[in-house]
Image (cartoon, rainbow, N blue to C red; front, side):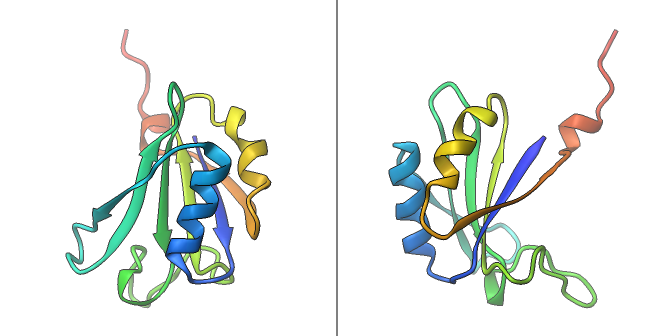
Length: 116
């Protein structure tokens, strides 16, 4: 499963600092593969889930289509949390100023049947 949170503002650096402060982690800057002009932040909570902060609009919008449909259009920045023990950081994330829990979604890993 993956939890999705959102910031209404579009200041990626402020979002990064808020998430880093409440989770006590350091996020790295990473380049988007498609298109190659964008960037996002990513990192891992020790012994826990992965965290990504991505723009939900403009040239860095990841969820392109025909037409383009951003997830949760009210929120300009989305925070994705996936992996083990997501619940353990949910309370801390909700204390970040301006960050709102939006939904939990299955990931591709959740759709793969267990091997026998």
